[in-house]
Length: 479
Image (cartoon, rainbow, N blue to C red; front, top):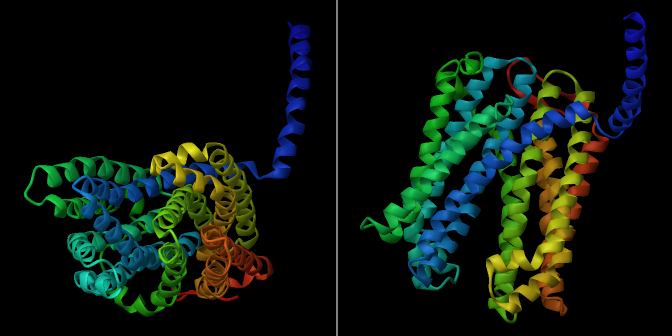
C-alpha cells in the first residue's frame, strides 16, 4: 500500500508541476484574480445598461408603427431627451462613483447614505429645470428649424416623458450607490423585469387605450418608475445596507455644495461626449444627399452606442475598483486594477471589432434594406471599428477618472478633444473635401484619440498617493 501510495504521489507531482508554469505565465500577463472579479462585476452591469437603453427604444418602436410622422417625432423626441435630460442625470450621478466609492473603501459607511440623498436632491432640482424645457420643447425645436408638424408631435411626446425624467434621476443615483458596493445582481433583476413589463405596458397603452401615440412615452415613464420602486424597496429592506443606509436625514442638505463640485464636472464630462455625437448627425443633415448621409451617420452613432454598452460594464468596474482601493488607502492596488481593466477592454474591443468587420452587411441590413445605405455602411466600417476601439479605451479611462475624482480635469480634456479638435476636423473634412460622411467620422476619431491620450497621460503622470479622503466626510481629490 505504501509503495502504491508513494508511486501515486510521484505520478501526480509532475502533473501539478506542469500546470504551474502556465498559471505563472498567465499571471505575468494579467492578474487573474482581479480579472475574474472584474468580469463577474461587469457582466451584470452590461445587462443592466442594455435593459435601460432598450426601454425608450421600445417606446419609439411602438410609436413608429402608428405612422411616418409618429416615427420621425418619436425619434426626434428621444434624441432631444437624451441630449438635454437623460445624459444630465447619468452625469450628475457620477459624483457618487467618487463619493460613495471612496467612502466604501475608507469604511465610512454611514456617509454613503447621506451622499445618496444629497445626489437625489440635486437630480430632483435638475429634473424640474429640464422639465420646463421639455414642456416648451415644441417651440424650441421649431426655433431650431425642425419641421413644425414633427416638432409639435415631438413636444407632445416629451410632455409624457417628463415623469420618466424624474424617475431616471433617482434611478441613476441608486444604481451608483449599489454599484460602488459591488452589489450588481439585483440591478439585473430591477432592469430586466421592468423591460419585460414595458413591452406589455407600451402595447396596451398604444393599441388598447385612447392615448395612442401618447401612450408610448407614458409607458417608458411608468416602466422607469417600476424600476425605481423595485430598487428602493430592495435598498430599504436588505440587511446588507444597514450600515450604508441609516435613513433620511437633514444632514444631506449640508453636502449639496461639496457634491455639486464633483457632480457638475461629472455631468459636463458626459454631456460634452453625448452632444458631440448628436452634432455629427446634425452636420450630416447639412450635406449633399442629406437623407442617405443622415441615415448613415445615425446608424454609425447607434452602432457605437450599442458597442459602448458592452464597454460600460468594464468602465463601471474600473470606477468601483479604483475608488474602493483609493478610499482604503491602496493607490498601488488601484493602479493595478486599472491595468487589468485596460487589458480586458482591449481583448473585448478586438472581439467586437472583429465581429463588426465580418458581419457589417448583416448588421446594416437590420437598420435598412436599401443597397445604397448598406454599401455606404460597408465603406464606413473601417473608420467605425477604429472609433469603437478608441471609445472602449477612453470609456475605461473615464471610469478611472470618476473613481479618482478627476472629473473637473477631464471636462477640459473632453472639451478640447471633442470640440477644439474633433468637431473642427469633422467640419473641415466633411465640407471642404470630398470625404463627406467619412470626414465626419474621421473628425470623431481625432477627438476620441485626443481625449484618450489626455486622460491616459493624466492617469500616468499623476501621483495617486495624493488622492485622499478627508476625515470631515468631504472628498478632496488632490492632483
